[in-house]
Image (cartoon, rainbow, N blue to C red):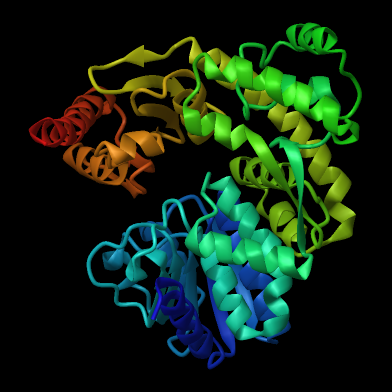
Length: 446
């Protein structure tokens, strides 16, 4: 039996269990992958005539468990999406049956009735299957008609910077075959006016990003204007080549690969360009306007203009905020870092720096927000191949200073107490140094 077949069997088992309940409490993460996961489960449960209550959380903690226990009976079901694999001790405290649909590295033995996680069958959940893809596999086992939700699964995967290998490749192939998704070649960016797209998007982050006058000059040199979606094939090629030349000077190879290629068009969704769709979800997640994000996933036509306007305004603020924080970056021995306050998106900042500015070492952003320090760490696939494991690093460094952390080897997060930033960074720097040194030593011995 192949890894994919084993994964589908796990999804089938979870779907069979879900059908037995009359009420389901769904809790999902607040990023693009978590919100598409929530959207997929909401659609699937609605279509199955199963009543549910949905909530979105920034992280799984004691407060979330307490909230769930207040709103659930013992004979009902709780589904955690895009969370729960790394916290068996919290899952154990839920006063009802639990199903975990996740893609983070599992820790310990889960007390859940069912766990669907790519890692359990030998597929890398950090790169080859997102939480939304996991939820999609369960949804399509609940009902064959749910294959029209494939676009949401692919949006979640792209939102998590994943690759189209193994399980993700299977979902993409299914979506292309059914026509629910199609492909357009070019820059992997949202639609709209060329100046706005290049000046106010952090993907890609160029030397002209944040400076509309520099973008205008760049486009004039290329003799390009208008909306990106209206460019001819030759004009798209001219733009892509010029952007690639800028990126090759400093960005990681995977950043260039991630920015130029195929744009997915979600033919069943109200916002077709996958990058516009993801940007709306990320904006809603950061601004805690979760209802708007879920409405978009539920295909509520009335909210589209509001969502697009909201996205454009936030993207502009985010780009300028990233540009401002980039000036504060410092270097440790084995990592780059920034300590800041009230950054609009620490995760976006971390991803931008490691992909486009300093890909040679992992990047850690420590952001003071809501009375605690929130940590976002990002690496590259190349660094992971050299031994980097940010999930382990953040889990160990955070627990050493009285916090909590975890995630993926290439991207991870933590929360730590105020005043612990320097000690946390020192421990993380040492752990990363050990990880990268071990691989280097092994290679030398060969």
